[in-house]
Image (cartoon, rainbow, N blue to C red; front, side):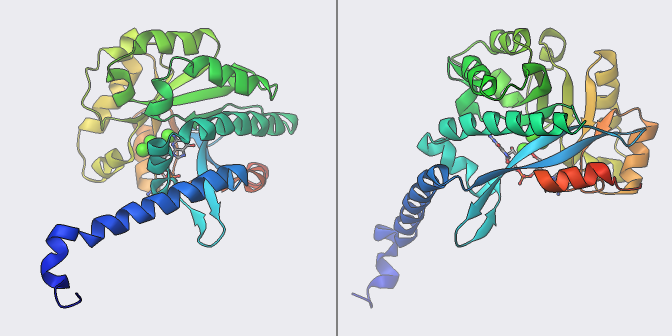
Amino acid sequence: AKDAGRNTHRYFRPELQKAALVKRTLEKELTLAIERKEFELFYQPRVDCQKQTVLSAEALMRWHHPQKGIVLPGDFIEALEETGLIHQAGDWIIEQAGKDQRRLAKSGYDFPLSINISPKQFERSDFVLRLQENLAKTGCPTDRIEIELTEGMLMGEGYDAKSILTKLCDVGFSIAIDDFGTGYSNLAYIQDYPISSLKVDRSFMQMIDDQSPVIGMILSLCRLVSVTAVAEGVETIGQLEWLQLNHCNQYQGFLYSKPLPLTDLFGLLKDPPQL
Ligand code: C2E
Ligand code: CA
Ligand code: CA
Ligand code: CA
């Protein structure tokens, strides 16, 4: 049978069997991870471009895997979505962010935290209510939480995105459009929908280095429609200086800080980096 191996792979596709096994293992591990509370929210500060003050922070999920150590969302979010575990994870994320916001507020840092939402959560009819109920457990007001959505969700079918955004906004949440510029969308929504910030995707920072006019155009658009412009993935002083000259409001990126555990965020707030 071993000799035949080379010719039979087309029919048995051992790589597919292996992929299915990896997927099943991951699914089991993620179920346990939720039970055993192996997830943690890290926070990356969002900073005022001119004053270099921290105005908010984005919650980014981390998985403390019992064997592999810290695992990044790129390696498990998709599996959470495919298995439906994203709903339980989502309940945990908003509740944890609420608790962390209260801890920050008690120490004098009463700024909003933003959380990321998966399309699978967004399209459920109980999406907004579920967020509200989980947040209510923590005593954190809705106006201290910003919801990050991607353009794809606004264009999705089977629901009325505008009414969901309106509901989010009516109950007090603010809304950011994440990865802005990477979607293929009709920009009209920027004026029509209750959006507070546009997070310009990290891929545009390369354009600053390449002197492309496109990122400047996006910043002008933000000014015209009075939406806060947030640059993502700022890594160099050169990029920050360009953003300052071109009226970008806020930025996030390794230049100021990578995402940090809450205790380290407290440390950074007490002793901010000098840029
Ligand atoms: P995102 O929402 O666009 O988050 C920004 C990502 O860029 C984060 O990766 C962050 O660590 C990284 N980043 C920040 N500054 C820099 C920089 O200066 N340079 C570079 N090269 N990267 C930078 P992370 O934490 O691995 O998250 C990846 C994606 O996973 C997120 O992209 C988001 O789409 C998703 N994600 C993370 N946490 C959650 C969550 O709690 N729920 C959901 N649904 N998705 C999440
Ligand atoms: Ca985000
Ligand atoms: Ca982003
Ligand atoms: Ca992203």
